[in-house]
Image 1 (cartoon, helix red, strand yellow):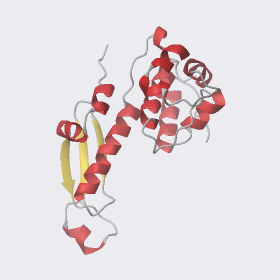
Image 2 (image 1 turned 180 degrees about the horizontal axis):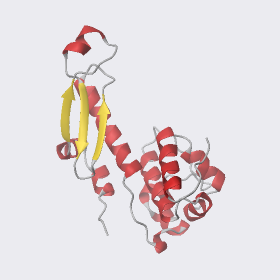
Image 3 (image 1 turned 120 degrees about the horizontal axis):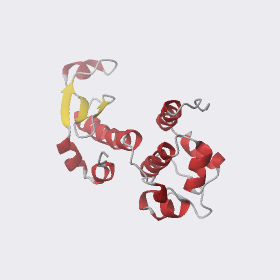
Length: 180
């Protein structure tokens, strides 16, 4: 069994995570005027331990692009790296005890987080782990997570990349993709 280090990687400071990455800078194409065409402000981060690669090239500032790239790397870790959940860890009670998921539910037990909430991406990671554990069956995942199927679908459809990852899982397990 492969040891997953998502929790460790995502808890690192920006400086520590950046130290684990190979950083490439290059000149981005597109609008932005002469300064953009003369400076290497675009950033590509490679995280060899996970095999993930992200890019950020929107800004003319390499500093801003590096910060944006680190945010994207953390998101990619939650989206792409799955943690194996044994059956006893897939119950609503066990999942509610996890700090990366339990705090994401409101007083009524529903998942209602926006993308800008710091609890959003950790909760996404747990939800995707559960979906993988139940072979992408949304009803079973909702039951394990202690939420309604509708609430789970609403949560998953809140971000295009999350929705895409859910459909990759569903197709991998032989189910039809969910429609938005």
